[in-house]
Length: 115
Image (cartoon, rainbow, N blue to C red; front, side):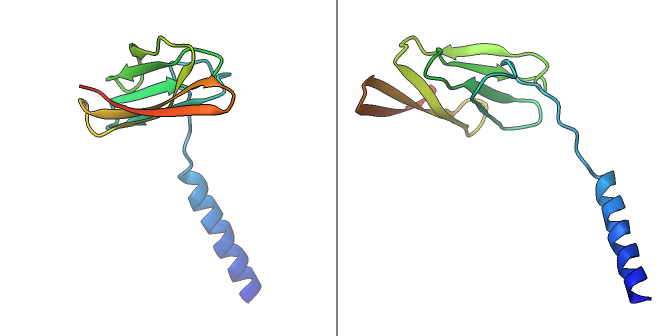
């Protein structure tokens, strides 16, 4: 009897949890095959995303419509730099950490804030 109750409880929990599953869809402005995508959203509507890759230039994208459209707002010009992280505190203030490399054994990191 206890075994049947236990199985019933487990089955009920599994069923309840399956009703609350989430569906994830790609809303990125970047190709799904991109090896490194990161970003930060400050609300359900507004967010930023970037691609980080030593082989490609880095670009920061911005959306204000729940990722329906994206606008390029910043692109690194030096191919020896790439963005490591991005953190926004609100729609006007944010920070990025970028890495510059010129020699095999030297990495220089910079913190930038938007103004």
